[in-house]
Image 1 (cartoon, chains in turn yellow, purple):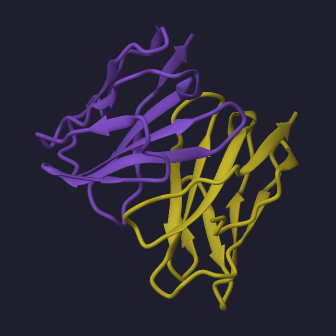
Image 2 (image 1 turned 45 degrees about the horizontal axis):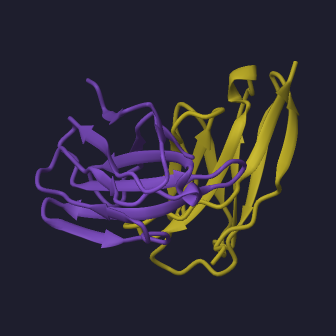
Amino acid sequence: DAKTTQPPSMDCAEGRAANLPCNHSTISGNEYVYWYRQIHSQGPQYIIHGLKNNETNEMASLIITEDRKSSTLILPHATLRDTAVYYCIVSTGNQFYFGTGTSLTVIP
Amino acid sequence: NAGVTQTPKFRILKIGQSMTLQCTQDMNHNYMYWYRQDPGMGLKLIYYSVGAGITDKGEVPNGYNVSRSTTEDFPLRLELAAPSQTSVYFCASRQHDLYGYTFGSGTRLTVV
């Protein structure tokens, strides 16, 4: 069961902000929104997570709408090393189900 | 600080052979997971464990077995390898059910 919907691919110019959207219209009250990315064939890397408040860390910002039905991951100044597949996941915490994500290409 | 270590990195198996994919973590994490990733696809959860002695099935458990005798180790066993099990296998761990995962670098398995 796909709990999240993401665009299959996006481009972003190097140095610009990358805004990756995610729809999760069936999210329940105790489910968190998590973001991971996978660079080439490496293991996925945790980026950020949140429940209902916006969150920021050294990698990215997470903006969650007030109704919690969608969110946006923001990479403030994209670099070529941010080219990866980005996964948006909703979970109560015990199990994560990964979809096919958004393939982000950062263009020089 | 090794994190999550998977061995081997690559393996070719013949149909019907068996093998164990090893996963060990040195972070004293309670939760451990096995995923498989087919080409161009997302990750599928095979099995997971919330602590030593406790394991449970994920989305695609058929053809696999796991055990969790210690906090550190979570091996994945393939008893009768089939071509459909050709995939990249990732092990992951985390401390608490609200924390992010730490993934290993993966085991690339080919069954011929």
